[in-house]
Amino acid sequence: MKKIIGLVVFAALVSGLALAEAGSWTGFINDAKCGAKVDAACAKKCAEAGEKMVLVTADKTVIAIANQDAVKGHEGHHVTVKGNLDKGVLTISSVEMVKEPAK
Image 1 (cartoon, rainbow, N blue to C red):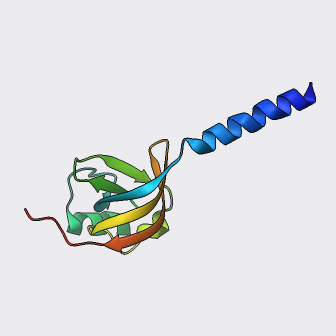
Image 2 (spheres, rainbow, N blue to C red):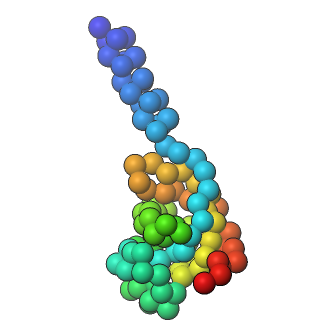
């Protein structure tokens, strides 16, 4: 019985890990308070005040960032990030600044 329970727990853990999506996303680093309303000066001010940073994609999707230190210094910047997206939360492994899209 213990072996069966152990296998069920192991299978659940493995399937949970499979749900994480590895990839890259491009957007602006903004503060969670303003969300999709990207304003670089406001993002920097809010970051200094301790507000959490998020990634705002071109289609205005707001993605929470797990490891806030990864985007420190990129507040308001247009970036491409690489990492893992799990349950709507992005864990970033790298950040690269990119040219802003034409307005």
